[in-house]
Length: 341
Image (cartoon, rainbow, N blue to C red; front, side, top):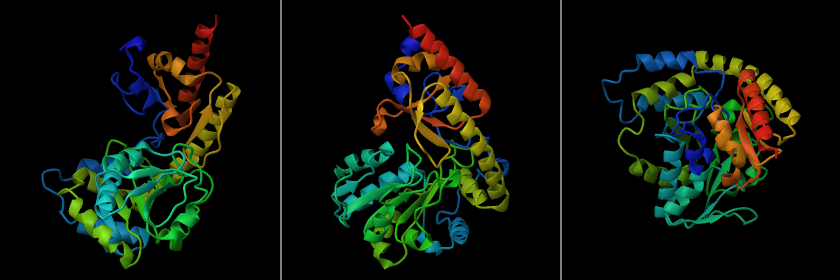
């Protein structure tokens, strides 16, 4: 597909598009060091000839042991997006009316709320127990701490902490301790950390205590049969093992080095990089990205425009290897030269 035939939707959203996967795809946030060998081996060995256990008994027990919680608190989900839509449905069916979102956030929170007729609120709206409250740390798209996370956890009610990038944290520390996390719903999606975003599988940890039981029961009733297939089970079972965790720790060291190099490269082009604790960061470019997106995409470069996140004039960049960083600089420089009068 030539640049003039590339649609605006393809330029704004991350990942593959109609032309396939970009050679240097900064628009997604998976682990750029590659796919975890232990998980790959488990995927190859997965028994796809049979259904998984419909109750995911062994999987729930293993995940619970890893997190130090009771097995009955584990909710298996087809993906983070599936859980976002399911808990929004459960909340609405329970009489909920409002959803409080971060100032900048993943779009599926709002899409799910709209699908169920929930009123969407953003800061500085006051939060209370009547609202379904979404938090994400490290946040998306900025990769930063959630400033009001502790008050949300203390408030009670239905608060979901999206931990999609916690396993890819490169800097900083989590805002909540274990006791505080036990007061909120925790949503885990390890496919990004394992470098296997094409495997869709997730799980949530319900808050401790009986107050969350009615919503958890409704979530279970709303779940489809076998939300996660054999390969998703293999991913979830393996990511908590010693081999995968050791590989992840090594990859984080590499990503820290690449991130420092990538920020320096972006700043050398005159970009203003925002702070981030994760394996990605946002930057204000020295020229509007949408005007150059098609040209860059034709050269195998893709960034994530942040306008849909409420950050116009910024792009989000997943941390990639040095050769991809250099390709970005060269392509941006050529695009700038061609734009000169």
